[in-house]
Amino acid sequence: MEHVTRIVIIGGGPGGYEAALVAAQLGAEVTVVDRDGLGGSAVLTDCVPSKTLIATAEVMTTFDSSYEELGILVADGTPDAADPARVVGVDLGKVNRRVKRLAIAQSHDITQAVTRAGVTVLRGRGRLGSSGQAIDGSREVLVDHTDGRVESLRADAVLIATGVRPRELPDAQPDGERILAWTQVYDLEELPRELIVVGSGVTGAEFAGAYQALGSNVTLVSSRDRVLPGEDPDAAEVLEDVFRRRGMNVMSRSRAETVKRVSARTDAAEGPSSPKAGKEGGIGDRVEVTLSDGKVITGTHCLMAVGSIPNTADLGLEEAGVAVNDWGQIKVDRVSRTSAPGVYAAGDCTGVFMLASVAAMQGRIAMYHALGDAVQPLNLKTVASNVFTDPEIATVGYTHADVSCGKMDAVEIKLPLRGNPRAKMQGIRDGFVKLFARPGTGIVVGGVVVAPRASELIHSISIAVDNNLTVEQVANTFTVYPSLSGSTAEAARQLHIRKREGAGS
Image 1 (cartoon, helix red, strand yellow):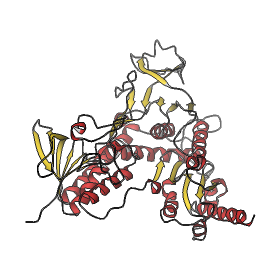
Image 2: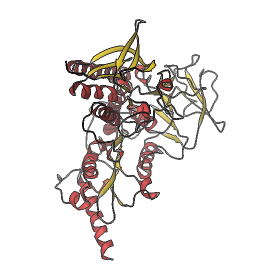
Image 3: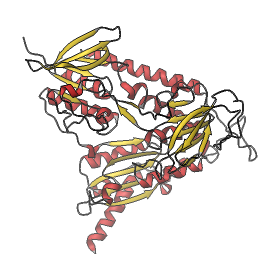
Image 4: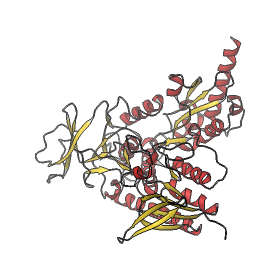
């Protein structure tokens, strides 16, 4: 009888279920141990739900910002100059029910695909057993089933893909009603009238922009000097300017110390709209955020977006010899190996690059390596990422920071979208295309797109980066006229001219 390698995967997110599919295709006997449902937080509480919510917000923003310029008339309720009321509104309860429905459906589809491939799915919590390496080289995985049973599995290779959870501040504990983690917002039935978002990273910026578009009065509390401190500075500047123009109160260099619920009847703090208590007047129907400088702001709800914590505690990692860093993230190499033989890790719990696409790639690479198939180590310089704000911010390859610090010798060009004919037709005023290229060869090494649907427009630059294309090759590729993608070709043409002029001098 042919030997079948036994694979046990702890965690059913993108890193876990993609690994399971690959391992099954390669003939392994695969078991996935999952606690919450296949798809993980990416499908159930993060990517799929948040981007579904953002899709509704995007429609609202597009309509609100351009219906008048594009000549669209609303027959009933069209506001005049003296009536700034919104033309359209949103039923947040209905939106959130759709969000949950789509997330559950996606999880169901993934489960069906995995089980059709011959993978066994166990509902419970997995952890590495204390017995360590067995005589035959296998490892023990213990499964704590939901019914209280403990099952022991043997695996020739184990993949840990347990993801992360929202970070909580000691003095700002989410309660699911007024003080919210990002996993709890989908239980809201009514739109927060005054929302304070603490944290201006990707999660905070996405939710702040979405709720502003849906009609909330949003205050964004940023501990840094700008929103999205980890993104391209020009892109962050555009987004912050858009946020402020649309009425968002962006508080830079402000750190939240405590968040608590208070009564509107006794609330005398200075807040984004504290004089307008409205219908609210019960105990705990408002939130009070105290900043590190002593200033107090208030609102009806507060969303905490202050990072995440890897789900790596109580997995038996230390006993198994799996090294983690000071933040609890599992240390892995470029083929997803941990410090313990036969144990791999993938996804957000490794902290490598917290994207679903990277988690999936790490999981697939782990299985290729464990099962002896051809494998190409993870290359993060070809990863495309996107911030789903409005406008979106998409990036790939080397960045402005890499060029500034000397990590990459490159020239750059930024081409504003306001000169693009398609952008003019669609009423798009904000955004740009930026390219980075090697000064001698003209090889494209990175790019940034700030625009509606930047997540789609970045693909052509990703192909260029991944295949070492030159600005000449990008410039000489036909684009549709008129199109936003035409700006990518035009930026490449201008970089080519600059390179030629530099060589001539």
